[in-house]
Image (cartoon, rainbow, N blue to C red):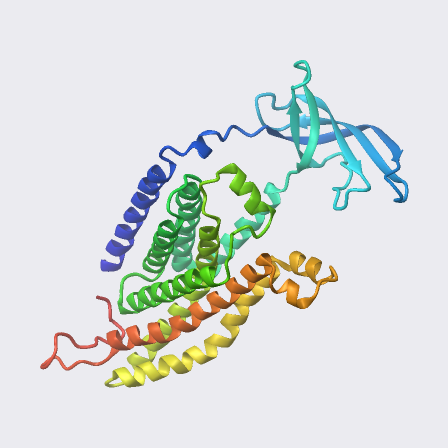
Amino acid sequence: MKEKVVFIAVLILSIIYIFIGNRIATKNNKVLEEVTKSDYTKAKVTRILERKETPIQIGEMEEQYNTDITFEAQLTSGEHKDDLVRATQNISTYISGTVKEVEPGDKILLYNDTSFEGESTWYFMEYSRTSALIWLAILFLGLILLFGRSKGVKTIISLIFTVLAIFIVFIPAILGSQNIYVWTIITCAFITFSTILLVYGCSRKTLATAFGCIGGILVAGILTQIMNSILNLTGFVDENAIYLEQLNSAIDLKAIIFAGILIGALGAIMDVSIDIASSLNEVANQADKPDFKTIMKSGLTIGKDIMGTMTNTLILAYIGSSLSTVLLLTASNHSISYLFNLEMIVVEILQAIVGSIGILTTIPLTSAIAASLYKYVDMNKHVYKYKGRNNNI
């Protein structure tokens, strides 16, 4: 009964946070006010009408080709749904990474250009890929439910709140030129407490997990700020930062680095924290009179085993996310010294190292908090006695 009350209370508080947070984040947000309805319409290619290939010569390059494909498509969304339209796809061989030519049955996105004397002209923009991603997401959620059962339902609910906290509250707050540092800490705290309390309920184990995780995040945040100053970072790590600065010059790009590091490391830090707290809870359950020193020592021993794989996980995740950049710079004939001083490379390394330090810090913090909460206390001399497996507060 108590577990249900806690779950419902956290659920209600999370909904309130998302609602109020969104109101605050979007208040007087000029960037979001200028966001208009999408100009793209979903369509399905019905038949190819014409294919025209034109040779072009660019400097001393080999002869290249510009291909115009005219096709008929049926609109599947928007005001003119089910209408048949004539559209064009342009492919240039001198532009690397061009998409494949459309074929009948392809699901695509079309752009309707009405700028030329009010005449409506449709152009191919991109293939529609959302359907495949939705089915993949359904498979992912189905596997969570299959393996997790009731806890799987709670996991999905917590995942929904995590996504809403990022996209409904945190991102609008950044675009609204609000304090990114404050909103990053608030967002990390909300995700930590809502996820842990919704999935695991309220107990000494969840308290040890939550506070150990927050401690690790704070250490990572402080270290990021120190290194931001020492490394003289500007925040202009790639073209996306330039576009973001042009969109809203009031956005602090160095704060974006801070936010990216903390949110990127949060999942791994939370994982380590719950592993330590859960393992020590079992250790305390099996001992007759668990004392602080024994539990703390066990936590550090368990942490050593977790440390290697989890640190590798975080570093490999960052390398994988920026693999194209790493390959390009490595093959660009620059010296290693130059590459390791480029801001985009420095930020990637900073993310990996600071996130890993956050993990390492979380291990003793969670162990110490868990040892304080799990230790045996004589009822005759102190306030409470450890309750074994039924250790709900």
